[in-house]
Length: 519
Image (tube, rainbow, N blue to C red; front, side, top):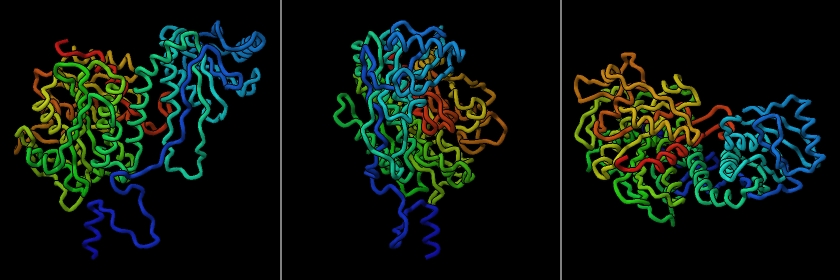
C-alpha cells in the first residue's frame, strides 16, 4: 500500500479521498463553473452620467477643453490642479474625493508627445476599483483614443477571484468613455477591441487556474468551448497515441511522468487565402521540473507555464471573432511535467517527429522539447510562410530583462523589425537578444544530434533559442519570444493587475494583421 501511495503521489494521481477529507478543486474536463466578479460594461457617450466618478486624462496641466463638467466645477478643478502642482505628465495622478457633486474626480497624466490612452484608462480602472458608482473617463481627442481607453479600462479592471468565498456577485455599474466620437469609437470597440480584450481575459483565466483545473485535456476543451460557433475555424487535436505513432518522442516524453495525457492542438483560422502564419506556444500546464525537480519556493507559479500556448490560441480567437482577413494556425504543445514512475530521466535520448535525436540532460528544460515536435509537425503539415514561437522558456531572460520586456530572438533583421513594430503598436515590449554562433555550442551532444541543456555557463535564453532554431529551416522567417519574465506580475501595472498578464495576445494580434505572405 505504501509503495502504491508513493507511486500515486509521484505521478500526481488524485486518489479517492476518505469521507470528510478535503477535495482539490477540479474534477473532470468541465472542472469548474465558478466565474470571476462581474466587470464594468463599456459604454460610449458624448456626456458623462451625473452620478459617475469621473476620470480625466490630461497631457499637460491644462484641463481638456470639452470636459463634461459645468463652469463652476471646471474652475474648482483648475484651482485644485494649481494647488497640487499637478503637471499632467505620464504617471501623475491626483484623486479628489467628493468633488463637484461626484463621488470622486481622478486626474491622470499622459505623455504629451505620445499619449498612451490605454495605459491611462487602465490606471483609472485600478484607482477607482473600490467605488460602486458608475465611472466616466474623459479627455480623449478622437474616437481612436476612446476605443483605446475602452481597451485599457477593460484590461485594467481584470480580477481572477472566482474561488474567493463571500464576494458579492452583483452587476457592476458601467464605465462610460466620454467624447465627441462616441459612435465611431463604439464601432471600433465592437469590431476589434472588445474581441482583443476578451482574448486577453481568456489567456489570463487559463494562466490563473490551478493545474488541477487546467491540464492538457481540459485546456483543449476550454479552447473548443471558446471557439464554439466562431466561423472559419477548425481545430485538430492529436492525443498521446497519435503522437506516438508519429514518433513525437520529445513531446510525449515530457508528459509521460503524468497521468494526464499530452496533447498537440492546432487551431486554424482561415480568413484569407495563401499559406498561414504559424504561432506555436509552449503549453506545460504544470512544471514540477520532472526528475530534475524544481525547488519548492515558487513552484506554485508553474501552473502558468502554459502561457505561450494560451497566448497563441487566444490570438486566433481575437482574429477569428473580429473576422480579420488573415490566415493563422495557432499551435499548443500541451503536457504536464511530473516526476512519475514512468517519467523520462536525465541521460535519456528521444527521437523527434523529424527524426532527429535529443539527449535529455535536464528534465526541467522541457519547454523546448515540446516545441521541437510541435514546430516540426506544423512546418511539415501546414507549410507556413513564417513561424513565431512563444514560451516561458528560461528563468535567465527574466533575470536579464525583468518584468517589462520579453526576449526576442530572430535570425534576420527583417523579421526582428516586424516583431519590434508589432510590439510598439501593441504596447507589449520586446528586447532583442543575441543568437551568437558561440552559444550554439551549448547544445552539442556527444551521443545524440543535440542536447536540451548544458552546464557550460552559456546564456540560458540564447542557448534555448538556439535549440529551437535547430528545428526551423533557415529559409523560413522565424522568431522566438521568451516570455518567462513577463507572463506573471508580482505587483500591478496599469493594464495588468498583479498575477497573470496575458502577455503576447496584443502583440501577436498586431503582428498577424500586418504580416502577409511574400512581404
